[in-house]
Length: 506
Image (cartoon, rainbow, N blue to C red; front, side, top):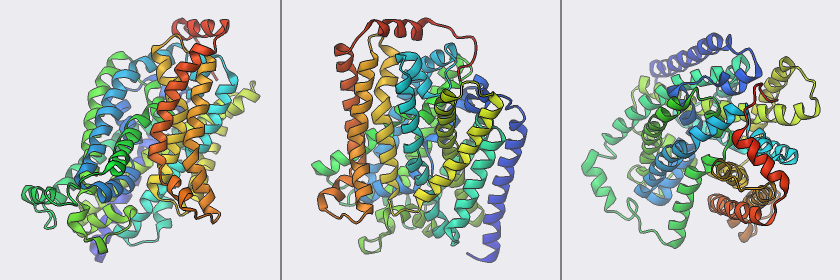
């Protein structure tokens, strides 16, 4: 890249950073309470909620790690992941979860997922366990966001990855420190617009590139063994588990569920269904589409590692300097919004549900300070984990598998069934947690030098175990509720579905 082109890219990045600072300062003035910090005062409209959900869903992890990895393994079949994310992870999730979650969270003044469990099942132990699991196991997901940007910085900017990581960490910390959810939701709106605009331009330039050659080129590519490969049982199960994990896995992730808490009213929740679905179809579908074309750009002996496939495609397309800046800002936007959502969810959950539970007389002002300090600590821990030699897809699957495998069933089923019990919820949580923990534990073992083929193989099967954990959790949750029941379960159910709480819970 020449000096003039490099200057254009950096100017574009600086404009983006300046925009985030302005949004942070202006919106941050309205963040007065811990409720404003965590759920934005429960006053977010359809566009703010839907784009905040979408930008938390898709980051550089999807564009870089998942799009490249699925394109490498499955060719054009990889687009199924993007379509699945739009249909199941956005449309169906909003259709089934948004309005009911908004209703119960506003009636009972719930701010976090552990509070949800406390109100539904009357278990403080479940509240503390879920709080610790969420904080610890969102760190690998956050680290995968860092790692996704490192390959972009190296390939497209030609700079030390540390510089790019510092940019995302500083911008994310700034948005969180200035006002939390209020600032984040408004920043996400701007970043969501950038992402839609950027992805549309990317598709256009990649589609018309000399390597692809438009419709005729893709038609020819689809006839090759790499374009539409024949999927054996192992490959098909891998693709299906990937689609299911990245689509239904969001149903149990606290940073996604928390977006429903802040929706203003039922009408905005309804409108959010269409907005979030369109956003996911464009952004996820476009991202996976670009990754699916990787065999048109590289021969097998020249194929980059999966975390570098998409950045290298974007470099080889030879985008105009300004558009290259937009692409980098797109990835920064996606990553900053996701990192903010993860960090705020993990930190506020830990401060409200763990720290506050032991210091009940703590003032809201002090609780806000502790939450912001935890945000900085979480960002730092994520950076440390990002420097381990772990592929993006693996880190994300460990995080999604353990958290959704533990909490999807007791959360989703509780919205529709009054018959769930505390004992059944514990069965689902522990069963899903232990099963999803297997590949993550195997990965930790390999870091200590264990290279047994069985251990290495298990470490790479995060998506499969994530899906199995979610299904097992549902089965155990329902079966356990039939076996373990006491009189307090009926009281908890009655409170959850009918009570109205006047003051915010902490």
